[in-house]
Amino acid sequence: MTNTDTFLIHQEPALTIGNEVVYLDSLKDVHTLSTDMPVKMEYNAIVHCRKGRVLLEVGNNEDEVRVLPGQLLLVPAQKLMQSMMVSTDADIGVLLVSDHVLKRVLGAQIDIWNRAMYLHNTYVIGWQWNEVLPASGLGMFENKNLLLFNDIVIGFLRILLLMICEELLKQENLTVAKVFSNDRDKTLFHQFLDLLSHEKQKRRQVNYYAEKLCITPKYLSTVCRKASGKSPIRWITDSVMEDCYLLLRSTNLTVKEISNKLGFPNSSFFGQYFREQAGMTPIEYRTRTQNAV
Image (cartoon, rainbow, N blue to C red; front, side):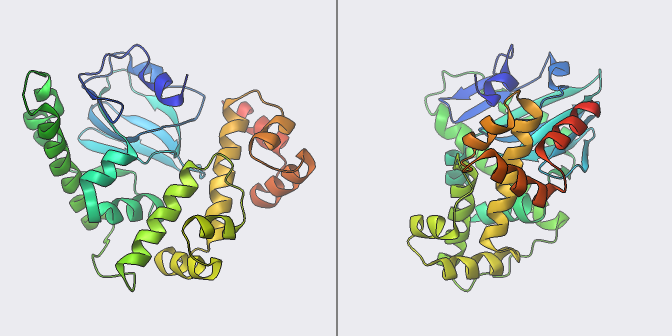
C-alpha cells in the first residue's frame, strides 16, 4: 500500500480520471489525517480548508504550517508531510494531481509552481477560495455522462491552477522576469528537480544527474546556482536527508536496512553522513522524534 493509498483509505472519490486526477469533495473521516507518521504523496496535493483548521509539518524543517478556513494547502509530489492536528470541525476537500497532468496543464507556468514549492517553500495561500470553489468546484462534474468529461475537467483544472499561480506570484513576489538566460536552462533545472524527486536512491554524484540530462556537471551547477542559489550537491543532500527523516520516523527499519535502502555503502558511512547533516546520529534522531509524540 502506497502513502497515497493510506491517505485515501475509506474515502470515496467524487471524481477520478484514471490514476492522474483524484478529487475528494469532503473527508468524512478527516481525523485519520492526524497521524504520527509522516508520508510522501505520489500526487501533488491541493487541500481546500473550508472549515476548521489543520496544523502540519512539510519538508525537512520543523516549521509548523497552519491552514485556516478559506485557505489552500499546496504540497508538491514526493514532499515529506506530517499532520500534527486536525480540528474536529474540519471540512476539507482534496484534489490530487499527478506530475504528468500538472506539467501538461500548467505548461510554461510550471516554473511558478516549482519556484514557489521548492525555492520559497510556499505551502499555504490565502484567498477567498470558499467563495470561488463551491460555486464552480470539481464536485459539479460528478455527472460522468458528459461526452467531453475529461476535457472539461482538465480545462477547469487549468483555470484553477493558473489562479493558484497568480496568487503565488502576488504572495511571494515571484516576478515573471527572466531568471534564466534561455528557456533551455529553465527546462533543465525543472528536469533536474523532477529526476531528483523520483529517484529511489538519490545519493548520487552530480555527474549521474548531468549525464541523464545530457549536459556537463559544470553546466548543471551553473543552471542550479543561477535558478536557486544552491549547488546541485546541496539539492541532492537535502533530498537524501528528507528520505532519511521519513524512514527513521515512519518505519521500524533498522539503521542498516535504511542505509541499504538509500544506497549507502554501509551503515557506518550512513551514520557519519546523517550526523554531518543533522547534528545527531540516526538513532538519536529517531529517539527524539518518538519522544516528541
